[in-house]
Image (cartoon, rainbow, N blue to C red):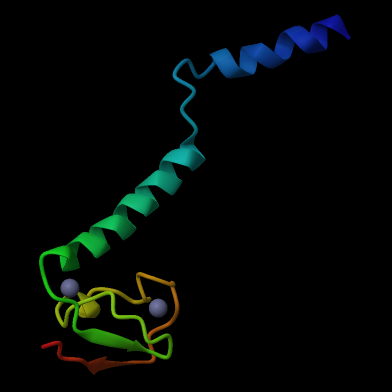
Length: 84
Ligand SMILES: [Zn+2]
Ligand SMILES: [Zn+2]
């Protein structure tokens, strides 16, 4: 039983910086999502996504996303909206 206890920390020290590949992948995914958001930070978002009715994108980056960046919903269609 004592041996089992001593084995567990060894698994951790095998990866000195505590790097978890799954965690890195998750963070990469988040960074990509944030980048999508950033595209529109300097542009006026003007495309309404159907059916979720979010407006996360301009007409340019709506072409680059397959799912709504805001809710991850499928894009069935888009509607141009104009703000005054
Ligand atoms: Zn955009
Ligand atoms: Zn949405």
